[in-house]
Image 1: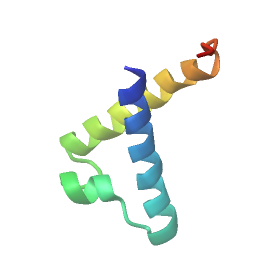
Image 2: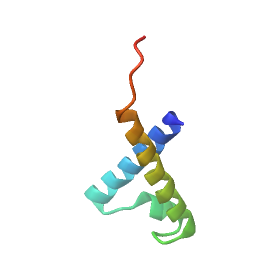
Image 3: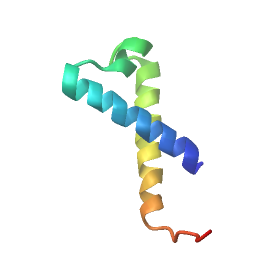
Length: 64
């Protein structure tokens, strides 16, 4: 679950990078616009992954 969340957070961060630099929303372009159901699902999954990733800040690290 941690790895999946991290992947989704990275995808979200790259999308925001594109929005910030080029005013281009890749998720909206790929999935039918900002308000399409599929785009909203992707945005929701990325947001939930971000919330899950907050827990990574507070976990004890295991020493290998």
